[in-house]
Image 1 (tube, helix red, strand yellow):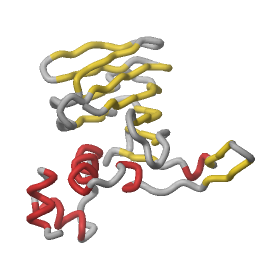
Image 2: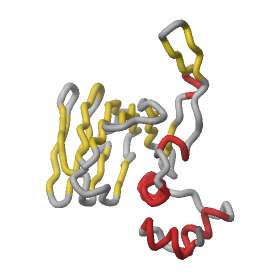
Image 3: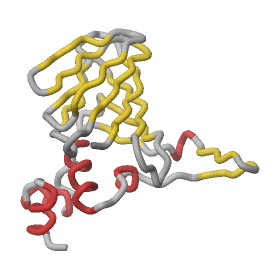
Length: 166
């Protein structure tokens, strides 16, 4: 696939693709998402594999092999909890440091995100609507529009993000 073809399919500019290819730029989570969709590759495959140990019918993945995605500034960490070949919702354990933000371009049409905050407080924006989500609360919002999750507080926040396809 050429850079022009991938750019057209993903919506990521040719110059950004070239910079990523040459190791001159680190893609954002949103960029990786768009590339995975355009290539038909599982999002988790971009960020590392899993070391699985089998104990009878139970599969165990060591913590060090759980794939992670970090924002460029390192303030947001998404641990991918979904199985390799998932069909349906994607699961992410989020840790967002003070001032951190996870800003996303629109996902596929009909996609929703469900954010449960386990610790701290986060601000969610979906299109032109913003809401504060406190400890124990759940926010459900369209993700097929520009959206963001931000930590506006002075303490780290932890949550579970479920992304449901459209």
